[in-house]
Amino acid sequence: MKDIAIYKLARIEQAVDRLARAVERLEEAAVSKAEASAIDAEAEHALRLDLEGLRSDYENLRTVSHAVSGRLDSAIDRVRGVLESS
Image (cartoon, rainbow, N blue to C red; front, side):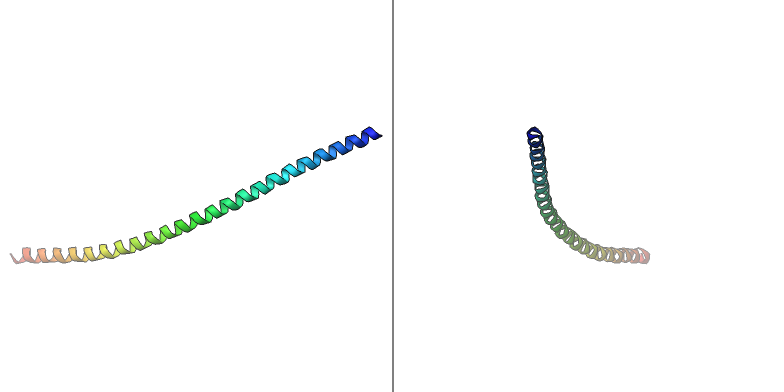
């Protein structure tokens, strides 16, 4: 009877050890996930700032291209006028 009690106690101790290791792994995973989330948040913020900068650059380029297009149209019209009057 004493041997059975020792056997059961040993099995309980093994189970408690396995449980402690599993909890430790879960805690490590939670910490890793939290760190990864913080890194992801920083990366997302940086990407948003880059996107805002790119949108601003796009709008500037669009404005310049419209101005250049208008000037080219005017130059073409002047050249046509000169050619037609010749």
